[in-house]
Image (cartoon, rainbow, N blue to C red; front, top):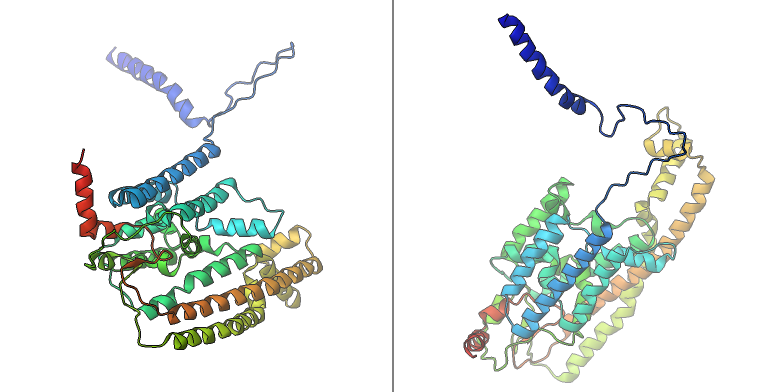
Length: 435
């Protein structure tokens, strides 16, 4: 009798678990029984599932971008305080960096815009266009507030910076050419539909996504270590978008300024992590004005020569540069395969021949690509030559300064100088006390 009761209890437990077991074993969405076949012409409604809207995320991204840039502009231009800039940096790293995985990025949007300008068949994504244009618009109005703490690449470097050891002016000028070369090459590879090298070699994307190419992760980590001891190495010596913004910041309507009635205590100059504050009399030299003008004219005479040399150098290298294009690489593989056939084809060749491709058609396409490379490479080389010549001219300019001045092109509106300025701190204290 006891065995019968125990068996019955066990049977009831198994039966109670059987529906859950069937749900677990059955595939999701599978029909356990066939639908009834109505003779009245009834049609089953389509099942629609709500999916997250990418347009909604784009609105959130753009709204937050504008809000953070507005906050930084108010803090730097109006209030002359750093606390909101730090808050914007934390929000930017958390949201645009880790939550949105570093995409979409104003730095990488350069390539989308360049390709859209060169190829009418390409439509630049609206989000990329807005992320490219809005920081430029804010820069024209308020200076480089985007670089201050809204760009996640700059913000993460700003947050880890502890000391600001300076490097020599000559070395800084030489390294300052790299962002312009990077920008020109990125545009070259974008307009030829070869590669988006800014996205490919983003040093912080692996950190934000917590995975990826180990080489780029190590490179990003090294940049962060360097950022602890010197201000924003990526922004100053690598970022192509920062180089572009430095042009517009020269004509900003409102911008960060030295505190009125400066007492020349040098604290702001020492605190600036990017060496954007020029001390008085730093470039005063004992030479006549006529001698200085002749020196600058000599460098200006070199400008067309360096532009021509750069154009010739990249024109010669255009065939090698074209190897970054996947069609050019594929043609090289096809040519090698037809000269020396192999028993096993690579996946690229299998796909090419499987789609009915011929070497003659591919050859015509590659010739067009290489012609584009020769044309655009010559222009890119000329621009690189101009950049180098202008850097030499800038180094040769020497003038007397009677007060501390902010270099609008180099200043990233981080507002560190405001916290160190005694006159600004007194003024802030008085504004808080006054009713």
